[in-house]
Image 1 (cartoon, helix red, strand yellow):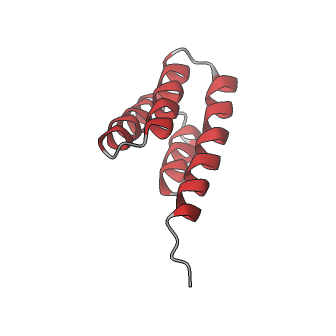
Image 2: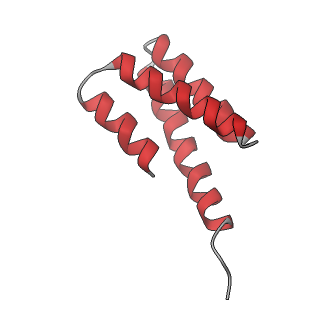
Length: 79
């Protein structure tokens, strides 16, 4: 997913401000669409980045990837 690539790119550049901004945007956008699990993960990622807790951020990013993949699968048309 694009959002994971954006966060990974910001992490590779060691830009915590960008990482935090992307996670915050994810939280708000997901909330607007009623995707509460994803919004909560966005908030958890944002908080972990603020606290400079890389392990927690990585754990939450892994969970986010699982949730996004599940969402993608549920929205695929069936034939």
